[in-house]
Structure formats: structure tokens, C-alpha cells
Length: 165
Ligand SMILES: *[C@@H]1O[C@H](CO)[C@@H](O)[C@H](O)[C@H]1NC(C)=O
Ligand SMILES: *[C@@H]1O[C@H](CO)[C@@H](O)[C@H](O)[C@H]1NC(C)=O
Image (cartoon, rainbow, N blue to C red; front, side, top):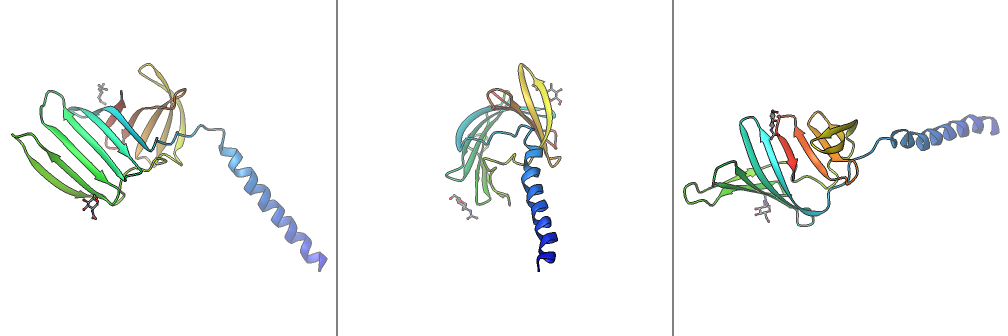
């Protein structure tokens, strides 16, 4: 009996040791701060040939994300109200251009910890801010102020660049 137990307990010890060891290997890299559950942010969105001003009203407890978007030198404001059940209402209220579109997005709105599991790439300066930089699934590059942990910039794989103000 005892001869068969020994190799087994050794194996269990090794597994436990590895389990305890493995999380500590990766904790040296900084991780992105979770988003506050409710906030308002002013952003500038830069994509090829379009510069837009964007007010983001993030409201996780109520499952909604409201973007108010305005092109440079254009009076027409676009509202994009996204619900966590996947329904988005994109509309304008300007008399010259009134319309509403209902879209369905399978993933819903971004979770407060949506950058969890991102790969740390190191530090980089963005304008006057020293930032930690992460990349996630070749989809997004995320820049966060090293000291305040405030997001400074994020770039989507499509080339769309968002800057916080
Ligand atoms: C917008 O993006 C282009 C191309 O990536 C870049 O050359 C330009 O400096 C950016 N503009 C701003 C205001 O960040
Ligand atoms: C999602 O929620 C919004 C707000 O309550 C509602 O207007 C919309 O119809 C819902 N969509 C679905 C598919 O249930």
C-alpha cells in the first residue's frame, strides 16, 4: 500500500507546487486598471480622414453605454446608445438629418475588466504621459497613465484611435 502511495503524493506535491508557482511568474507585469462602473469621458476619435469628438457615458450597473459623437465642423450630432442585451440605437435629432438605426451587437457593452488577460508590451510616452501599453488579441492596443492609471489612448485594429481628454 505504502509503496503505491509515495509516487502519487509526490505527483500531487509537484502539481501543487506548480499551481502555486505559476501565478507568481506573471505578476511582475502591470495589469490594466478596471474601468469605474460609471463615468463620463471626453474622447477624441481619429480615423482616416475623420476627427470626431466623443462623449462617452459608461453605465455598467444599468447595462448601457452612451456615445455622443460629433464630427469636426459638423453640427449634426450622432447618438449611439448601446444596451448590454446587444441592442444599439444609433440616431440623430438634427432637423436636417433625422434618422434612427437599430443594430444588434452580440457581445453587448464592454465589461469593466474588458482588458483582463492583455499582453503587457512595456512603457511608451503618449504626448506628455508616460503610459503602460498592452495589446489584446491583435484587436486593441491600450495605453494607460503609469501613475494615475487613467486610460490615455486606445487603438483598434481597424486603425481607429481614441484619445481621452
Ligand atoms: C490621426 O491619425 C493619423 C494617422 O494615424 C496621424 O498621422 C495623426 O497625427 C492623428 N491625429 C491626431 C490628432 O492624433
Ligand atoms: C434591450 O434593452 C433595451 C432597453 O431596455 C430595449 O429597448 C431593447 O428592446 C432590448 N432589446 C432586446 C433584443 O430585448
